Structures are given as structure tokens and as C-alpha cells.
Length: 179
Image (cartoon, rainbow, N blue to C red; front, side, top):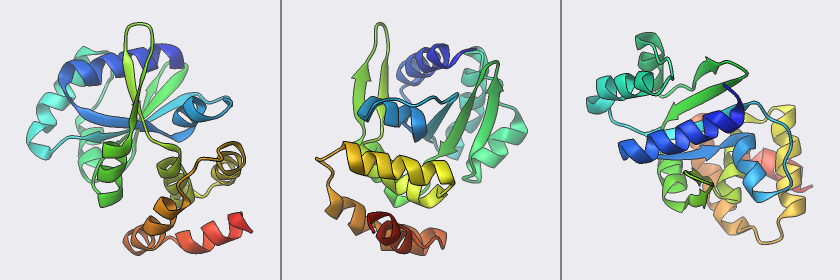
């Protein structure tokens, strides 16, 4: 499966199933600023444990091989990676206040025959500050450079709360990148 095919499958699947979700990561960034290459789709999903078994079955029916082991990790709140040919789907269950708010703030983009819910740039920055790999740092710099309409107060209002939840020094990273 190619990334463009995965975008369509994911968009149709989540809409058909009535599952709240949003796309984050590099694919989401490509909706807000000039694109860079990426081969995966990162998605946060709002699914409770009660719907877990049916979620697994519905994913399999759509050609996404979610195993019971991956589902267990997913419900533990960890990101699970599902290889799909030339691409992969990274799924994370929404478990934090920030992820829930990011879901509420996400925007819908329409394609030919499907729609995708995409995290807004401010929330992308917060996710990138948490991961903080070299590419994440470059992505935050690009978002800051390319978007002159960012709500910096929103970002700053979450730094200490997310930092306390994750143990990651988000405020230090933010101050460093803002230099």
C-alpha cells in the first residue's frame, strides 16, 4: 500500500465507523506548510476499551492487520506501528488531556472521495516537542518560519502540563528552538 492509498483507506474507515481521530506527524504538516517526504501516517484515535474487539475486527476488514498483541499495546497508550507495503500506519490511542483537546481543535480537509481530520499546527508543534528527534526539531523550525498565524499562547499554555505528564522538558525545548 502506498501513502496516498493509506490516506484514503484511513479517511474512509474512520468516517464510516464513526471513530473520532486526527492525523498528526509529517503527513499532517504537509497540509499546513510546503510538503516534505514521508512514508507513514500517524493517527491518534479516540476508542475506549469496550470497543476494542470490534475496532480490531473492523481494521482487519479494511486490510489493516491489527493483531491482538498490537491492540494490547495500543490500549496501554503506546504507539503501534502497522507495516502496510510501502508505508506504515502508526496508531496511538487518545489518553491525555492534550490529545483530547487536539482532537477537538483538529480541522477537516476534503479530498476527492474522502475526508481527513488533521491536527492544527500548534498541536503539531506540541507533539514534535515531545518526540524531539532531529527531524522533529527541523519540523518545529519550519512551522515557526512558515506559519505567521500561530497561536503561541496556546502552545505555551500546554508546555508545563505536557512536561509534567511526560517528564519531557518541553519548556526548555521550546525556549531553545525559539532561541
